[in-house]
Image (tube, rainbow, N blue to C red):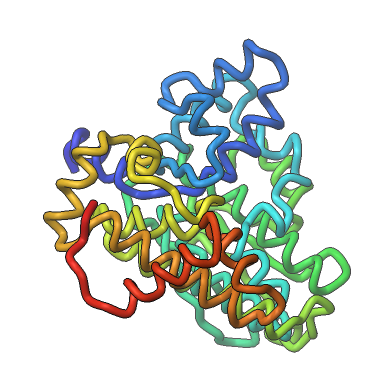
Length: 337
């Protein structure tokens, strides 16, 4: 793959801003280190403060490279407590609230690409072992994918430990790369680690899969899966600006994010956003209405809020404004970006 094509591919793959912020807060403990970690990423303070902002895989990799230069390639093991279930958002919730460990690992295999679009998972059971193999979806250097996979494995181990209530000594973590100089640090954090393997994978004895999760919660589990399905659908076409806008609106703190703010978050002008949405057969108002409808339906189903309170949650001045919108939603109309 040509370098410029490779770069464009990495720039199109979206990554959660959560990991980026967490790493920056932990290791950027001085103004100098903070500046060094941000160098070349294109991420400014405005984006860091925006809960709906997203970054690209290219920007995440640049941050990792900056940390490698500052602290050495083993920097992620200086704070293994960071990679706890909470750092994985809806994926962590879906895994912990599964009925048992087997179901939790199935969730991670099914939805892990949402948090790490650089690889895909292949799950299989044979010979008394569950294996989740990870294959790259984009060409990355060993130093790049190994760091990302180490973090992912620490997060996975923390989820398994939470469900089992103990360290998962029977788990095996396989890397399809030579053993690095800091392999001792990796084994301290993960336990049973093997290098120079034919695949990169995590393995768990099937005998442990029936262990029930103390955090099992059917309602919360269903809600987390709903969020993961919506995110995966919006990421299915990474070149499509419509999917990026839908994902942005679904995660925005404000239900009434305006087009200018959305365009700024996505790194384009409002005019460009409107033009690209029109080319895909939709408009910003249409997508915003769809998100408002979804949120309104969810709040109404909860049954513990008045119409006035729902209107306030959605950013309307009063219940009348919400009623007008609901009437408009029920009637086909031309979009007015």
